[in-house]
Image (cartoon, rainbow, N blue to C red; front, side, top):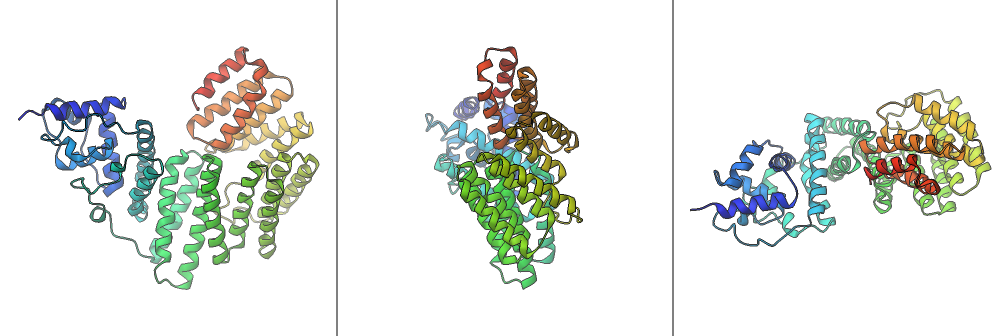
Length: 456
């Protein structure tokens, strides 16, 4: 019996997406890994043999190929391969999801054995993302796919033991470290899987102590999910939901500082929508939590947040006063690093807030010194924060009249954003590009446009 229909179908599906045979093999490996934590031996040579008809894909590989290409697995069987030739999935959607899945699978692999705790939820989270993006139902209707029974392939559910709670805290530490330089769409998949895992554990009968620990863990990871959604992906609706989970969990756990952090982060949402009174109300609520558990580092951060909110509202004198309070509180802080989850604020980050306020008050030279010093002290792995500082420094150079230097620095910010997506940084660069539009025909701006095109 001829295998020509299989050959033409597989090759057509691959070429429609512009993939190489190695791309197909890599995607198959990722799907198998996320689905059942198993490795498959697919390689470019094997895919080539399938396409040429030297070999026929086994039932297991046909199931993976069907999921990969969004078709019925029967279409890839030798006797049925000729049907449904005109069905074309939403290729851009699928390609983006597969890239995200591949990166998330690589992260899961990087997490090692502790990643097994969230692995049962990883595939279901990815399926939900497919549904939200309106990809063909066959991509998630796995019942006709031989060899991929979700209920049987997944590892057993975890239980809320002391060891599992410890692993969940270790995972939160890993996400926190990965946040600064990891693609947000990739990191969000294990983070959501983590939250779903904790939610399931909270439904079990656990001791009050374990319950509080799980709540504190959920507050911390939900906070990170909110930051990814808002600052990195510009998804305000999702961010509100995650911040609400963080706030409720922190309050139930009696953790006033995590509750304050949740409210402080939430303040950025109405600020982005020009709700300048609502944003300050959140800061007031956050400070009420700090009054119940005084902490100068948190107080300093909230004052810094307030400075940015005032700046965006055009209240520069109020913003300058908030920066002064933030510096005063930070100088009086005696506990360094006492909050392991609070890694997004220190003296360097405070200078970043100050460098945002100062040029709005006409202090361009001071802003240049502040931001340059902050960039020198900022850790190299803090790619996203570096992009923000560079974009703000570019604006300072522009306001000082040096268009060429401004574009050069903005280009450096664009280079950072190529390494890790960050919607907030991209927004700052769009604002900068709008400001230099009068010089659009200059060599400097044209060079910047080429760099911006790479992160569009």
